[in-house]
Image (cartoon, rainbow, N blue to C red):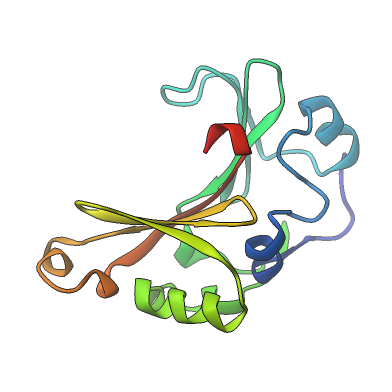
Length: 163
């Protein structure tokens, strides 16, 4: 479906509720094609993926073997800006260079957004109660410093059974 206006994408609402406009994980490809904007790209075998991945500007929609959306993903945090496709309310994502773990934790706490923090050798995952996961990775120089300096590298929304 061709839209006459950009899709509204409020990143604070996405983190709180796990929805992009009215798109939610679990919806079928057919439902999305009938009710949402046409994707920029339809790729049945993107990279090493077994199932279809559609692109919407900087976002990827991943579908499972049943043609249901199970993942919305982006690692283009520095480019999450309004454009012809999306009208983006950036919240804390206006300047990706500020997205350290400490900065994001403070922002989530200020909005009373609950999360579970999982620390790994070179990264941290914040699993929000909405189903959104924020990934942080240590650069070589930040690895020697505090994990609080690690930078956000991606955000994703995954179906509960995929997390």
